[in-house]
Amino acid sequence: MNKNLKIVTAITGASGSIYAKLFLEKALTLSDIDKDFLSLVISDSGKEVADYELGNGWTTNLNIKEYSNKSFFAPFASGSSEYDALVVIPCSMGTLGRIASGTSEDLISRAADVMLKERKKLILVIREMPYNLIHIKNMEIISLAGGIILPANPSFYSHPQSINELVMTVVDRVFDNLKIVHDYKRWALNK
Image (cartoon, rainbow, N blue to C red; front, top):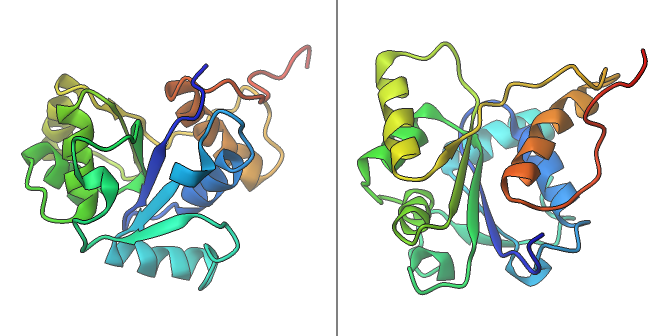
């Protein structure tokens, strides 16, 4: 169990903004997450897709500190920051490629670079298919560097009854990989 885990969440332009929404909503309820350090960065294309899929202003009621993807003055852009993890949810293949190449051209790719170089947790919830060889090679590079590739592949063991329940099968795996103790229905028993 991690006490007071400091997490940055990044949203990029892949479809699947509901994964980020449900991740952030649950994160705000978990006692092992430091709410003062729960931060958000959204790429330009991520904002467009999220606004289209979820409606404008869906983050306003979340009470989470949001940073511009163009700014490098966010605390987690530095290796000396106190942040423990970056979750990119959903992660586009373009973002995956920028992280794999180490370009650090925006705050999201810089924060990912910091997490890798400082040996902190980097989780990329990729949401695209099929994969081409470039995608696979980029996933290999990030995995070898210590990042976690967590495809947004929902599971059906728990017999989800709604879209939100199906999405939560992925979101809950993110919390598992952050080593945060949380409740969720992993399996449907005796069905």
